[in-house]
Image (cartoon, rainbow, N blue to C red; front, side, top):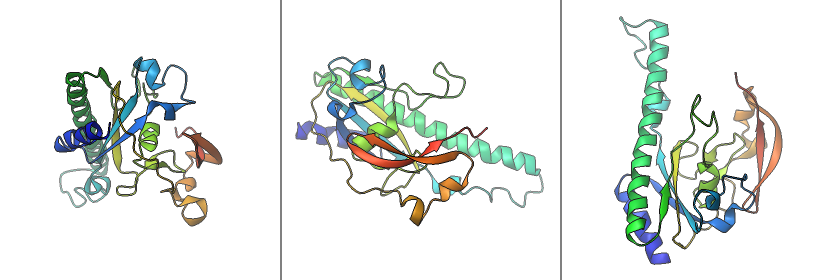
Length: 220
C-alpha cells in the first residue's frame, strides 16, 4: 500500500514531523515478549515511526547567562537543566499529539491503530523502561542505525532526534533498512566509550542487521 504510506508521511510532516519511516511487523522478530507490535495491537501489520530533531542551540547551552550579574553558577546549572527538559518534554508532547492524530487518520481509513507514549520516565509505572522501543522501530523503519552509544543515529540529525511510533493494522509498504552504519565506530571515533556509562562492545542483531553496540552500564 504505497499510496497510503505516502499519505501518512505527508500527514505527519505537515503536522511538524521532520522524518517518517515505516516498518512491517515481521521485522520485529526477537522483540522482548510482551513488547512486540502484535502483543500491543493484535492484527498489527505495520509500525509508523516519526522523528523530530533536537535544537543544537539548546544542546550547546554552556554559554547561557555566562556573564549574568544575577545568577550563581548553581542557578545557571539549574537553568541549563531546565532548558534541556523544556526541549525534551515539548518534543515528546508534540510527537504524541501527531501520533494521536495519525492514529485517528488511519482509523478513519478503516485501520485500527494505536498511538504510543514517546518514552518511559524515571519513577513512572515502567521505571526507566518504555512500553515500546522507538529507537529499534526507527532502525527497522529505515530512519537510522543504532550506534555504539545505544542511541539511534540518523544520517541527517545524528543522535539529535526524539522518536514516537504508531502501531497500525494497515499493511503499509515498508521503507528499506539502511545498509551502511551511521556510527563511525570505535576506531574512527569512539568518543562515547570514554565515558563511564559504557562497557565492552557487544553485537546486536536487529531485523537481521548486525551492529556493534557498547554495553550500557549504570551512570549513577
